[in-house]
Image (cartoon, rainbow, N blue to C red; front, top):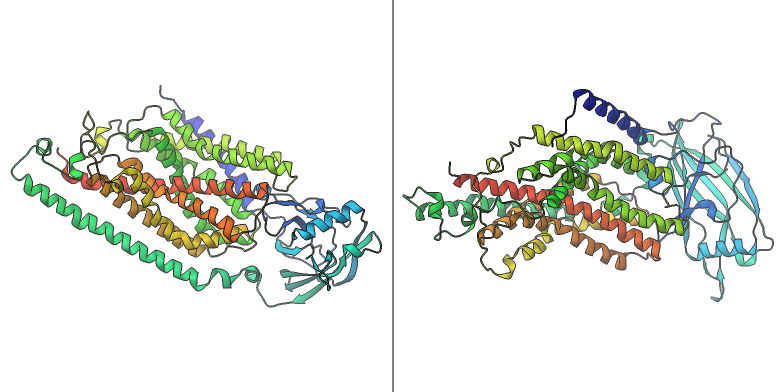
Length: 603
């Protein structure tokens, strides 16, 4: 049964989606401040979270520690969807800062610590807790205190800093940088009185640095622009040259030689089907089976649809970050990613339905549903488990109910309808004529040809497993920089490198898929669909293995929450890479197969 859609209904759906897009994009570009100040204007110091320096994702609200807070009319800052999903908990510190007004040792607040409060502070200091805060959207990180042994090497001291000295650099009416120097450490083991006074001072200094360059001082150029980083780009580029050369040899020499050999052996014969009966060999022998419907067609269609969406999203997202430098804006990358994922849902619906229909799929409704839910359901399962742990640990990473509700509504009202829209476009205007035979250059035999025995390295499983090594090798070094940035306090900003590596990864994956497909077909095995897909998608397995190695050798993460967060969201990353690279590999393999078999087509 075919669904009917009136033009007015489609127009109403499009208007509703455009309205939702405009609201969603306001999350990306909206900001409470224009970053311009006049004399005596209030500059709010927002306290964010506290947590161990080694467990960056296991964070807690700043005032979960027994800090006191100054008086303030503004309690909580309005959060964007990206900030809510990233566990940011911005609360006004109560530190009164006025633009260009210096302050000398003013009291923030006073508090009386009971034995439990003192023990809480000691535990935070011993676990090397750091806090994060923002002033004019500039991040500030500092330790609660650094415990150490006293002079005779016996007792441990727990210094709690009571004074915050801010140094603010400004240019005209804009804040350029904010630095924090913590002073007046008080050893909690030697408290003479449980009453403590927390104080602060503010010093203003002019600077000639422009506002658009103010974030540069926070970027670690020595780390991200190291010679090793440049060397990895060069090595990946050389790998691309090698693989493209190999593919060129296959296309221009090997396949051409095969055609010449077949032509010599079959000279003077007209019937293609008769000629290849029992005397042919190689890839031409399986011409009647290469375009057979692959097993688990619906699942493969869903993977291909999701992968095509992620490829488009990845390219556009990287270019957007390069142009807007959104890494300098808090949680803007997360918000923009959500917006872009919803907008590209039409790509997944189109690609999945086009592939599914091309190979004779009939139940397109179930295919669309599977395509629309395969990534969100995985993200929901992993995110739900981690969110449950966050609630149990009272972590700031616990996503608020309204944020979860917004994501669910966004999927129902935007992502799913756009996926259906893409499917409708593919069925009606995607070039599919309803005849599977008309899509391919060779006729499909009614009975599959038996697959001959072959060496172990020619088996589909071996080809798929070995194929993922080269794409992983092209991104191996870049993975280190990305992991180090995400799991520590370094800000990743070299998105030009990322764009180049991303393109190299796509090219390498395409070449690997073509080579793998040729090797498989040349061994007279027609099961190329999943091989071309998995030979590139298996790269995600190597990424996960590398992530496991990185966790145990490069980090000092501990605890059930941080471990679950690390391996859970790394698994989601690998699932995305699985779909994305699998789509690229199968697309390259499909192009290669149609290219070589169209030259032996019989009208």
